[in-house]
Amino acid sequence: MDIDKIIKQVARVHNTIAEEVYAEMQIALDAAFQSKDPEVQKEWAKIPFKGDHPIPEDVIPYLVGQLKNPQAAVS
Image 1 (tube, rainbow, N blue to C red):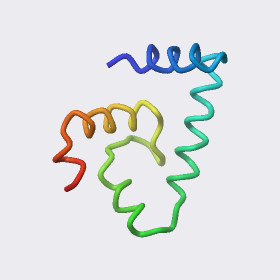
Image 2: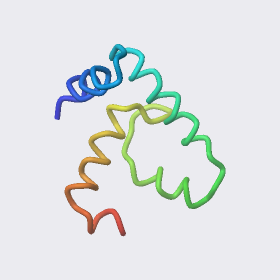
Image 3: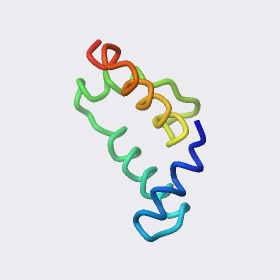
């Protein structure tokens, strides 16, 4: 999976640059990751990532995998 290609495609569709798309994705991930809701944190615990917070390169492949395997999404 080419995440850079995905981000560039999103940028083209929204008439912006890939760096802006990536930055906005990271802002959204950071905000979501800071949720204190236990159910939200339970879902974050399912996503493998390195470091102290997830980045788009961690989350996109996980979500694509969930879409390809709907049964995994309900577990």
